[in-house]
Length: 125
Image 1 (cartoon, rainbow, N blue to C red):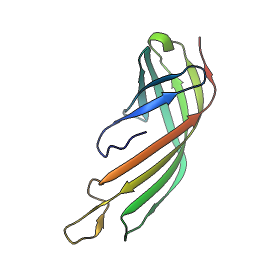
Image 2 (cartoon, rainbow, N blue to C red; image 1 turned 120 degrees about the vertical axis):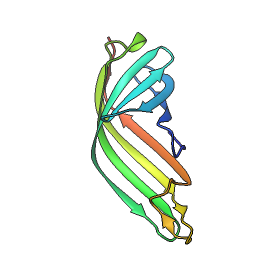
Image 3 (spheres, one colour; image 1 turned 90 degrees about the vertical axis):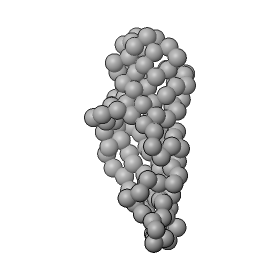
């Protein structure tokens, strides 16, 4: 989950094959690094669909995206971990208003709430 309008980092909670809290750092080429206390994992995601809506009166933006994910390239306790699955991202944002008082999608948003839920089988070595 993230509420920052500028950071490439968000909190992550993994549960299932292992349970850990950490940080998801968004990277280039749809590859994120998940950093947990006992090591890291790479998460590669590919967008498969979605929808968005923007209300020009209230400046509220809503977006839903779906994706496929692949886990791998682990270090530390996660060396050899593999997995794949599906994810859904839900975003709520409030756009800033320009000097004329109109909602602007070109300016940095005033607020952002991003929640991504993913699931799929994970194999531990």
